[in-house]
Image (cartoon, rainbow, N blue to C red; front, side):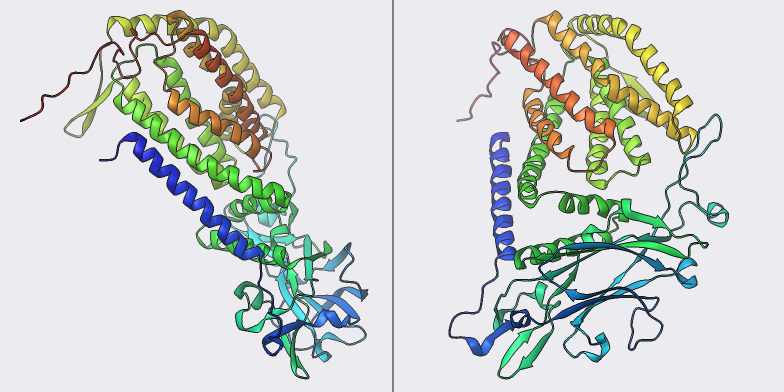
Length: 538
């Protein structure tokens, strides 16, 4: 069996290998080997190096394939298209009846020679993108007392439909890119990611690739979606264009493929949107930093869970530990998980919260010394007895909670009443969960005070799981960074900063109360008690 230290060293080693491998893969994505000098026969040259006069045309149609000019609408035409110039234009698009009846509308983007229709130009490139997507509409929020609603109005026929039935939504943004580098590819080793976007032609004795046109699907965010009503005849479409380098193009292709894979594995549009936000709303250099931060977050999460479980698994006594703080932490963790579930938060936040809730429930079982015995099909719960030292700790714990209750209960009840009068919710359950979670976020740190009070009374912190605390502290500071990157409720974001303050107080107490080796440690043992050694067999 591996010792705890060797297991931790193994985990850190695997983590280092993972980070090194990921860096190597990322280097392979952003760096493309050019065609070597002297290998002109196998080289693929850029057609844009000839500086042709180009035109950009955007058409809409309800068909996924078109072969001629019939049944299509021209919505944007840029005659003097400069691939180096960035632009953004908003146009109104006619919505066909088929699309209004939960159908799909496609955009055909053509890049072709100026003055020539796209289907008459043999050197044109085009790409297709749906302008609609299907998603479950956001449930209507109302004032639970007055019934007043302020959310977006959906037609009567759609209001009567089931809330879990997806309806057609309009993508109001279309982001286009053209790869502008005059890069000469090696025809014998074309990157597979870019190759599928390339169209090649023979000009004399050399092979050229036409302009690489790319649609940035990562820019299609849920916040930009609009519900398509049956009475809607026109909808706005913002078409934006910017040039893109080869390295960023390859990186973006891989990220889009990754998001698509997440959706194939069952991630919803909203979950995938959270991942998109990390890439789209973040500077690339900051994104690289975020990757390393996320990797360390994963490592510290694993080590914190490991040490926390190890601590509670071996714990035989609750001396110096606030039982009420453990119960409150369990309650707050479960409430936060239910709140995030009700808010349909990203799985990136929801899954760790769910795992944490399960662990906190297990801690409560250990803290209360609960055992479950079955009498036939009826379970019987029994609680273990407390010794004198544990009863002394419970007295301090009860004393701390008594003082806190005078402040905490009026604040929570007042906050719940205020939100009922002034805030709109989907249901009474949603109000109840929001009231609980607002109390947890706003005043939850007060329930951490009983443990600080117990530490103060006992003048010791040796009974606390400091290894797990340390790893959780690192993750708390990392969460501060993620609080600005990943979309989450504002109250959850503020709670990340609240935890920083609490941990700093714990650190102050650790400095204030040096370790007394005669005291009982977290495993119910004293440092001065030497463990009995097993006799060696001759």
